[in-house]
Image (cartoon, rainbow, N blue to C red):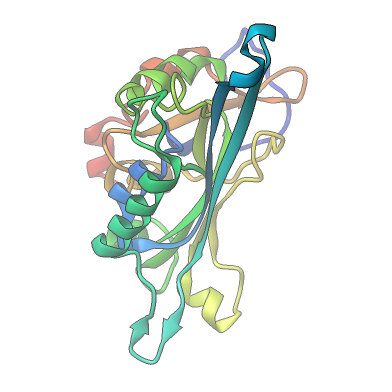
Length: 263
């Protein structure tokens, strides 16, 4: 996409960025599980206990004690001689969330404790992605980073996460996990060319490289149906990358199924 500004009133060529309209660790683990090779997330809870001092009750003296619990998840998959030594299996996920429930549960809310994901990388094997790139293999690393949800997708994000009570009870900020890079895994291991087929520096980067055909296939074949969408961005007159206002109605790929069949 050209980084030159275009008139907001005129037709704009949108660049599509695959995104997850959630930052729930439970949702990310459910969707990607053992494909995750890196994950950064955090969560916290505050509790307060207040008691009247009996010997000074007549003077209204009380004592209040506050406790702050913070949990950080900083996961990176480790490789042993027989493969991953600490994969995020279903049992491992269960252990993590049992500990989370024990540490972050609060009588003040009925919401299941959760962690806010700030970034994660999933290693995906997909011929569908290889077909629309010049990659020599079918294994790719997809890195996602949490950014504040744009105004056009704030309400859809809140609705999609309503049952998890992320914002109303757990105090999560309303963020989306936007795709930053797609890299052929083999090029990382062999330190060849950077092997990146999609790259974006985040909201401040007005020149994302996100080929339509690759973005569409990631949306259709990698992202979970519940939370995945393609975000259509354009460069505004003030040289700022903006999400199109009608993005909330563009949950489906901007290319039709018939177009995808020909990719």
